[in-house]
Length: 216
Picture 1 (cartoon, one colour):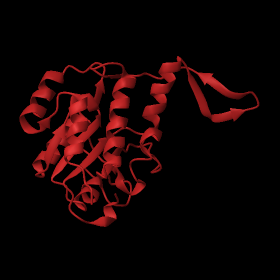
Picture 2 (cartoon, helix red, strand yellow):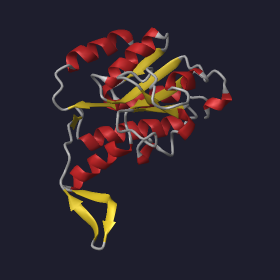
Picture 3 (tube, one colour):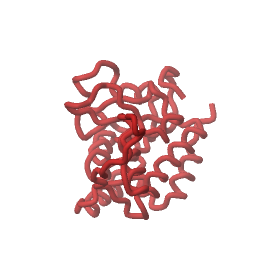
Picture 4 (cartoon, helix red, strand yellow):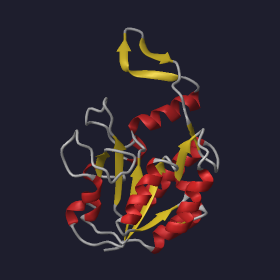
């Protein structure tokens, strides 16, 4: 569903910081080495050293957490629930970054935007175009599910801003990853349980999507 529809929907989903490079790092660590796809020389693609995978998922492997995010967005898309994504911008960004390959079929390009701080609702100054707040407001959802990376910083900041904006926010730790050295889990989950509709099982996340689907 496109933001161009400009009609109220009961529910929307926002993915925070699950971008193209993020997925490639996970694949590298699963195979045990990285491949430099950018530089194809006379000898073909070259294996390179691994970059750090400073990510964890408290309910299984990092791949299990990644799949939980992908599957949740895929289900939302199939149920005609609007899906959005936001990406971090920094001094090296060129304005061409997109959401990860596994999500591109489920989140239209016009539903993606950059953010200028931890929260998705802080628009960047470096690139023109609507920020994610304006895109989401075009469909005016009553409920907003927020998921992605990472649980204790960017997702948390986004959730707090969404609550302040009056959204009925839905969260689940089963759809979030975080930094491996984080010590803020108890504090973060306490906030989610007090201020959002926090869902404790992945199957219930998907049932919640079904009960708030948009069929028109």
